[in-house]
Length: 161
Image: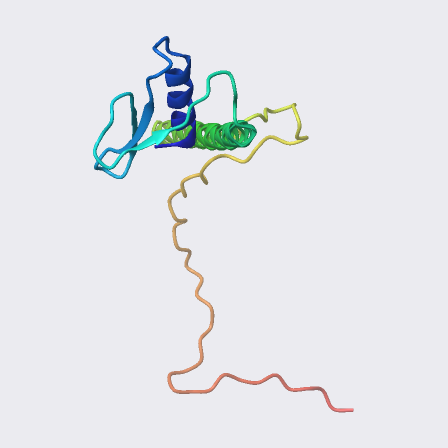
């Protein structure tokens, strides 16, 4: 059991309206925990509870435990918020990519997000894909001169001085 539970159990027993002769017994619950009862149990020890008097060390332990709990809770909340933000950003990026892929499949121009012609750039953005090449030109009757088969090409000769 946690210390907070133990302190609360002791406080509840101490504040309960009962005969002052009744005692509080600390017992082992058999699972590694502690059980507080108003009847004696086997291998139990009697706890001296004095109503109206709080142990200063117990109060300090309780404050320390509450502070540690609050810090752990704040850390868990911060981690949960960071994970939620990362999931949101990943979902938005996936949706943008899906919209862009769908637009490209349909042949639409997909520009840069946030930029428009006449906005930030002095020139229009490039198209998303290059134009398709047209048919090749028809061959002409001219063929360049080629050296004879097996012959080496002629080297340029420098003029004599």
